[in-house]
Structures are given as structure tokens and as C-alpha cells.
Amino acid sequence: MSSKLLRMAVTTAAALALVSAAPATADRTPAATTTAHGGDNFTIVGHRGASGYRPEHTLASYELAARMGADYVEPDLVTTKDGVLVTRHEPEISGTTDVADHPEFAGRKTTKSLDGVATTGWFTEDFTLSELKTLRAKERIPAIRQHNTIYDGRYAVPTFQEVVDLVKRLSRELHRDIGIYPETKHPTYFRKQGLALEPKLVDALNRNGLNRSGAKVYVQSFEVTNLIELHRKLRVPLVQLTSATGAPFDFVDAGDPRTYADIVSAAGLRDVARYAAGVGPDKNQVIPRDPAGFLLAPTTLVRDAHRAGLTVHPYTFRAENSFLPADFRSSALPAEYGDLFAEIAAFRATGIDGLFTDNTDIAVAQEQLAHR
Ligand code: G3P
Ligand code: CA
Image (cartoon, rainbow, N blue to C red; front, side, top):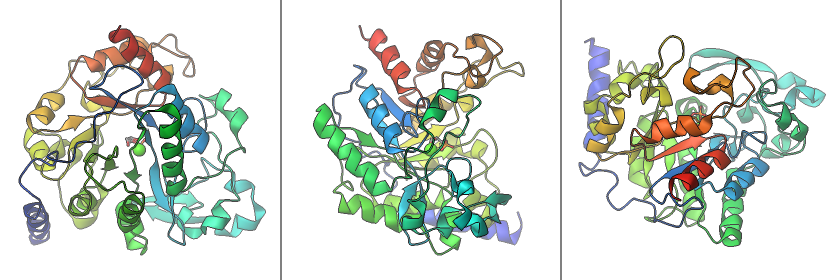
């Protein structure tokens, strides 16, 4: 190991040493509340809202997911130039807003290195909130989700506060505690620009009375360092996201050689349990596919995570053939629906504790059928 790598490993070990050795679930489990689907020990997360039916990360998308029965709605968080948390899947917004149609912002188009990838477009951190509010959301994958395009141009980019307010209002109306499952997007990228997401998120949760044991909140990240930091500041459970390939960007940036594959090893998961209550793996890390796209035997991830005291919420369950294993596709047409019920059943059989889905209604129906 080079001296730089050794330094990084020591630094991370020191950070972990500051984390309580007790499992991070102790006293952080969200209060058990009634679900809309009867599977009270199973968590359905409306991924980017109900993004199978509305442009993602709009209030309309979150509201629909809650009304369909999601236990949690999932806002991905980035920040504006003036430091306001807003909900987008990535800082570059040409794929999900009409920014390219605004001539007044043509000069903002630029190329940046986003986690080491040269990315051209418009970036939230170059817009004030009032500027961003002049944009309208659009469907990310119109070729797959043509129906959703009828909503293009109709909804603004929400702030995190607006999502919290929506969730509170819907919880009162639906007589059910709707949870919120925010993800810090590209934490190292934003921190390097002097726009760290974590203090803003901690402040927002504090201001809204959501930084407490029993609050129906999970906080997630694909990076590790910021979750370890958040573990010291938050009283809500944290979820370590993992990808099927690659490594957390904070590790890459620091020269730490560990990968997501290391994190989902049995030993890696025991380390995760020192600061997080759960893992959010790519579903292919739970049941891999063969080269033709058919499901193989499940991995040991769920068993190893449970042994470490971690819950498992894999992502992302979607109804279109394009995203389904070959076992459950209805045809060769990517936009047609296949059998998401069957896919969820196959993953439920591995012992997962919940899932992220673009199609909350189908996941809810699957649970209701299973609990009849
Ligand atoms: O946060 C769970 C899942 O949403 C992670 O993937 O890329 O959709 O944010 P992504
Ligand atoms: Ca996410």
C-alpha cells in the first residue's frame, strides 16, 4: 500500500473509531406506524415520488406516491447558488427541466467535472432559488414514459422544505405518517464548491422537528464520509447506498481503494453498521442477472446485512420491460409493462425489508395481495 493509501485507510479507520461501536439502529428506528398496504414490516419508498407516472421530483410526483400508499417519499437533494436545498437527481438539470428553452440562461451552459465525469449543461449551483423557480420540470425518459410528458412544463422544482410541508399536510389528511427519505447527491462535489449539503440538511431536519428518534425519516448517501459525519449530528437512521460497480466518490477522491463490492462484503457491512441502520443496494447486488438478463441465485447480501443488524432496501423496481429481468418481460418493447408483481415477489423471497419503486401502486397491491 502506498503511503497515501495508508494515510487514507488510517483516516477512515479513525473516523470509524469515533463512531459508536453499537449498531447504528439502537434508538434510531423510525416509529412503527400503520401502512397503507398491510405489510407493516415492509417499507415501500416512492422513488423520486411516483416517477412512473409523473415527472420525477415534483410535488405532484411525491403527492401521488403518498396517495398510492408509499410509506416514504424519496427526494434527492442538491443545492442552489444561494444555498437552498432543492430536489433533483443530479446538479445538471437539462434532462429534467426546460432550462435549455430559456434564452436568458443560455450563458450559464458550461462543462464541469461531476465526480470525475466531464458533464455539459446547466447546474443548480449556478442558479439562485428564484431563478430556478422560473424553470419547469419535464419527463427524464420520454421514450419510455410518453404518458408522463403530458405533465411537462406544469410543475416547478421543489425545495426540500416544500416536500417536508407536503408530507406533513398529507400525513394529516391521510391519517397516516408519511415518511421522508432524503438522499444527499454528490456530497463531495458540492462541498468542494463551498456548498456542503449536510449542514443544510441537518438544519432543515432540526427546524422541522424531524431530527429525533422515532421521526419517520431515513437519510441516504452513496458516499461514506458524509454519512459518518451525519451519524454524529442526526438522531434518525442512515442508509448506505451501494452501486453494482465502482466506488464511493469520496473514496476515489481521497485515494482510498475500497469499492462498493468491499462495502457489501460481510466485513464491509459490519463496518457500515457502525454508522448506518441500513443499506440501499442496487437490486442486482441482491439477485444478479446472467448475460441474457435472467435472474441468477441470490447473493448473501441480505443475510450478511441482517447479521450485521442492517435493514436492506434495494433500488429500483420499475414496471417497464426496459428495467425488468428477462424472466418478467412481456415483450421486446422497452416501454411496455412486464410483470413487476413477479419481480417484487422474487426479491421479497430473499428477505429484503423494503424497496424503492417508481410504481408505488404496484408494490402496494403486491403487499395487499400477500396479506389478504
Ligand atoms: O436512493 C436510492 C436510489 O434512488 C439510488 O439511486 O440514482 O435513483 O438516486 P438513484
Ligand atoms: Ca435516490
